[in-house]
Image 1 (cartoon, rainbow, N blue to C red):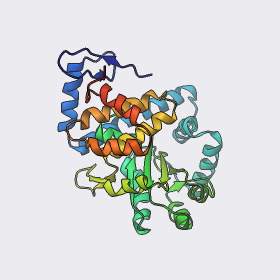
Image 2: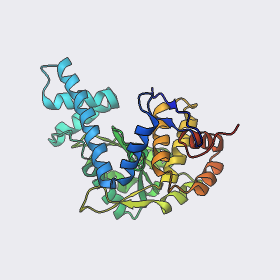
Image 3: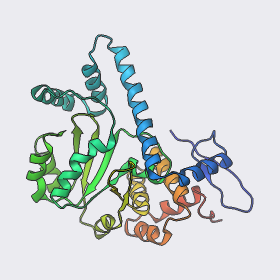
Length: 298
């Protein structure tokens, strides 16, 4: 659980720090450093932190199963996060194809095959989720990657045919997801990282989002990757927090971190308009106060 500390500061807005152990002054120094860092450095930090967390989990599995091979450890760790049934199917597929996962959390290598297929299909897409919020806000580790794409049912066959060599996914899941407008999951065969792909919803506000996506260079010398705008990521976090009955502390943490880092440049009028359309205005007001961007009303 994330605990927030509210610091009383005379003459200015009060900001809740991300942790009870962090002073407001120390957090402001951190925020200034994040703002000054290029997106490539932020991306590198998230990937490195994620690698450390995954490695710690695998070491724990190795200790529990000392006779397990390296590949068995990778699959046992994946089973903790994806479930036994899915990993059993994945294991059979890996054996049939003689694919030996490295388990290395290389985010771009995990995403590139998907991006190539979406580009071939001329389907607009963008990164979202915890990686996007870490790029715009305060960085944290993540165990899966999220992509939103303007996919339609007519794309399901092409997706299945072109993605099957690089990813594991359960039969007909993509087609069912596209029929129902829900997300579907891909497991990258080499890294064993999960990619959650979400089609656009029918709402006009969702269609606007891809048009506002920003091209960010995540690795120096590589092509930019489209990432949803900070305003869109923020409002999606608000919707997600509301859907959790306001219990998802990690989502609130991501939201406040984004608002704090983006504070000087975030477009509040756009954020307020989106919050109105998606019925999360009270939560937006509360988040702006907690992030120190607005005075609390008496």
